[in-house]
Length: 221
Image 1 (cartoon, one colour):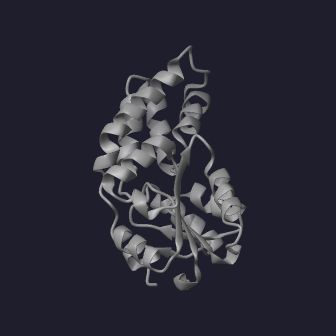
Image 2 (cartoon, helix red, strand yellow):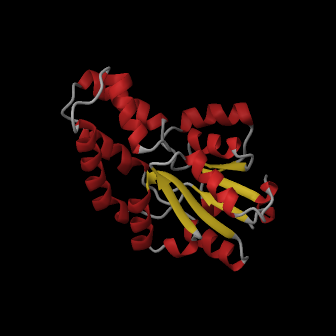
């Protein structure tokens, strides 16, 4: 098992890592595309479950490009984004904190470790939700979409140049989290219990041999 005590900088995804909110996001996507043809919606929702960590902006781009096979009409994408945001704003602050998240963050703070959030969730919405839930104070910064997750991690590394790459850990639950960590040369840890695509992540883990825990409660410092 990985030696967690060596990491001075921790970067967390949110959905499926800090909050048990993946199902809420899937429901939000299903709600806002429910009036489109079923033959397009059903495969889109299956795709969405395997693409957690992508921003809603890129996910809706895929809906039009790959599943509807046409560009959005005037204001059509903006309408979907607005409806999706309204749903998330009402539901996000009520999502349960994952097992061990509060305790781990308190432990990292006591050890003077640095913690960030880098999420595919919309940034202002994410900050408001984590503030209402009571987790925001644990992080040096909370970063989200529409910027790509790999770019968010790159920004964090530029801001924390005094921390060696070997002392940085990205904690996520999805393929895009692994890719963001790998592209920036930092270690990756998968949280598996709340993942939206456990089968896909099991295949990826077998291929790349990255460590995993069921929940944050399994991390021993």
